[in-house]
Each structure stands twice: as structure tokens, then as C-alpha cells.
Amino acid sequence: MTAHPSNSRRYLALWFPFLPTDRLQRTPARHGDAPAEPLVVAQPVKGALRLAAVSPEASALGLTPGLTLADARARIPGLAAADHDPEADAALLGRMAEACDRWTPLVALDPPHGLTLDVTGCGHLFGGEAALRRLVVGRFRQDGFAARAAIAGTPDAARALVRFGRVTIAPPGGEAAAVRPLPVAALGLGEDVRRALSLAGLKRIGDLADLPSQPLAARFGEDLPTRLRRTLGEEDRRITPLRPPPACRVERRFAEPIAHADAIEGTIRALLGQAAALLEAIGQGGRVFEASFFRTDGAVRRISVETGRPTRDASSVLRLLQARLDALADPLDPGFGFDLIRLAVPLAQPLAQLQPRFDGETRDEDAVSDLVDRLVARFGASRVLRFSAADTHDPARASRLVPASSPAALKPGWSSPEPGEPPVRPLQLFERPQPIETLAETPDGPPLRFRWRRVLHMIARAEGPERIAPEWWRDREAPTRDYYRVEDLEGRRFWVFRAGLYERETNRPRWYLHGLFA
Image 1 (cartoon, one colour):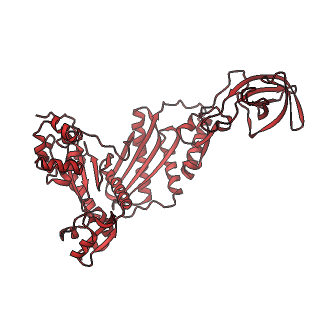
Image 2 (cartoon, rainbow, N blue to C red):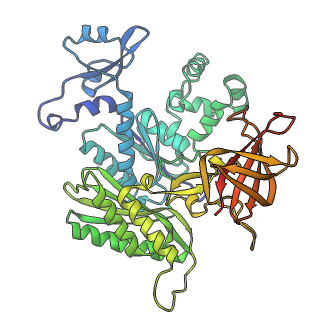
């Protein structure tokens, strides 16, 4: 007897058996009294056009995927055919997955033409698992799609039931009894393995379940016993959701859809207050806030904003969302109204309670961060940039531009000199090092004087060298550089370097001025 954990999960598998043709036939006539004409989708296979998918009407006439288009039209003259477009089908399935987010945040793709929803703990919110299943199927059928759904304790069991079985809900621990009558094709095995199992007289899952796993693994591979255990409900396989679960999520459902701007803004304000309370309870603040608007027709619109630092200030986040909405090229269209509005915090970081200043003013860094947040909400994160240190010793590549709201911008990584010491790098760096004429005591020593732009500078002090080797993966022929910080008799400080190691890389090293300290 197989033991099932007390905290077993529940999965809902969705399957759209006629997705390619349903996508093409979603017209007002589809919902009218006139019956739809048979439709097939064809693609070239080894020089011949073969059916990739058929409509329910074409299936009722005996057409199946894999049949040549010529044979299909010989059976049904005047048969309507369209080109197979897997990219359009995948995009449609992605939009369907977004629509399923109204029932659970854990939604994964299950190709071909299927979805898997982790509905653990969600059934009671909709009146039970049976009511949830009817709601999900009814929503897609209302939109013109043929849909089937089944619920079980593992994704593989739910998938097998929805595609090959008649049981729609397998109770916890009842997966094995529900899937035993199903054909071995429900395991999702390759064609070669299915053919070998059929020749061995193993045609149903129950035939395999009665056999020890080791001989099966030795003859058909370890994948067969693994799939068998998962389909029988003995082993769980967690799904990988398209959208990772957020750190915080609050939502509000409406019995009557809302469309007025004031009602939408009031709902967002209330949800922000709830999210702030939840974040404060765990000592965190949000870095990314996402508002999702679910229309009654199944369309989903998401608006997200980022902040430069963790925050729980509902008013400032609301202003950012309003600025983001105002900057949209495509305004938020409520259609017939939103029946669900959700606020999620995909990214949260620790945030301690800050003590306010006596004068009530904000700190300078807070004001700068608020300005960055407003600019990002207005123009987009890719257009508001900030310099950050790059992981390289090459002075020409020591900085990079990153989005001002990214984590890299919060910790730029610039090195600071020791207290009382001059800066390590110059304030001004020339785009191209400028050649100079120098005089040194030794070929590998610091210069005694140098001439730059017709002006002679006598060196009073010199620090170095700081040897910087070239990045071999970029330029193997570049010479090694020895950098010196030098100061002339007038107190002006320069950053000069000698290109090439004496007697190892060149016999006549050249000198360049790369930057000015002051």
C-alpha cells in the first residue's frame, strides 16, 4: 500500500484538443446558429502536406492528424485548410496561461496545447474542486475553445486523465485506481517504447503497475518506472510556473465588474495598504510592485513599477503607478469591466523602520531615490541609467551604465581611498591616452619630467608603478602598462603610464598621459 503525505498537493490539468483550429475559428459565427465548416491545419512533412490538427467537425468526418492533405480532400472535396502556425499557437497558449492566473499563481505550460495549474488550497475559494473545474472549463468554452480539465495529486496523473481518461477528479490517494485502465500512451513515452510495450502485451498502465520496476527499467530504461510512479500518484513532480510566486500578494474580486477610474484607483490604494501591512509584518519593503487587471472577457493587463530602494509607502507607489499609466501608449481599457484586481510584490528586500528627522524633512538620498523612481515610471527603466563599477582592471572599461533602479545601481562598487590619502583614480580620464615626451633615470623607472601640449612639467613626487596587464581574451597583442601618479612642482597631479615592459615586450617603451587628478 502506497503512503500518501498528509500535505499532498493538487493539480489541475487543462487540455485544448483543437487549439490550432479553435484559434482560427473564433469568430462571431462560431457562437451563432450556423454550424462551423470542417477545417484542417497542414504542414509540410518530407515533401508532402500532412494534417497537423483538425477541427471537431473534421474529426467527426474521420480525418486525423498525420493524414495527407490530398487524401483528406479526396474524402471531403472543398475541405478548408490553413497553414500550421506553431508560433501563433504558442502565443495563444501563453495568453491562456495568464488568464489562469486568476485562479492560482502557479501555472505551467504542458505542451502540446495544455496547461498545468497547482491548485493546492484553492478549491475552497471557489466552492470545491468540482466547482473550480467547472469554472475553469466554462470560462474557456465561453471564449470558443474546446477544453477539458482533470484534477489529481500529481501533474502526470492529471495529465493522463485529461488526455486519455474519463475520470475528471481523482481523490487524494485515488490516482492509481483512476489511471490503471488508461493506455500506456498516457505515460508520455516515445513511439519506440510504446511499440515495444505493445509487442510485449503491455497495453495498459495497470499491466505495468503489476510488474516489478527493476526489470522494466532494465529493458525499457529508467524513464519508464519514473513516469509510472508519477502517473500512479506515488511520486510528485513539482511544476515550474511561468511566473515565480511573489513575496506578497493581495487581491480583490468583484461580484459586479468595475470600470470607473475612481473605483479602480480606490481599489489599488486599498490593496497597497494591505500589502504594506503584510510587508511590515515580515520586516521587508517592496522593490517591484505589479498591478494586474483581469477583465471579464479573460484579458489580463499588468502594470509594474520599480523603486530605487525597499519601500512600504503606499502613497508614493500609487503615484508611480499613476505615472506609469499616464505614460502608456495603449491606455488601460476596462472593456466590460474588471472582475479581479490583484497587487503583487515580486521582489522584496529587508527594510528596517527608519527614525524620522526632527525637522520632518526627507534625507537627500531619499529625495534622489524618489526622483529616480518617478523618472523610471515615466520613461521606463531602460532610459534612466546610472554609472556603476565594472569587474575589470582596464581603466577604459572600469565603468558601465546600468538601469538606475537595478540592484547594481544601489551598490556601485567604486573603490574609495584610505582616509587622508589621495584618490586612486583621476577625476578626468581621457578617452584616448595622449602621448607625452619624458625623461627617466632608468628605462623602467618613473619619469623625472615630461612635456605635454608644449608645456614642460618637472616631477616633484611619483607613486607607482601600478601594473595593469591587458585582458588577453580581448587583445593578446596589447602591451602591459605601468601607471604612476605624479605631481609637478606647481602641485598638479597626473596619471601617466609606460606602455610595454622594457626588454621583455619592447626596447623603446612609450609614455602616455591618461588622466588628471585636479
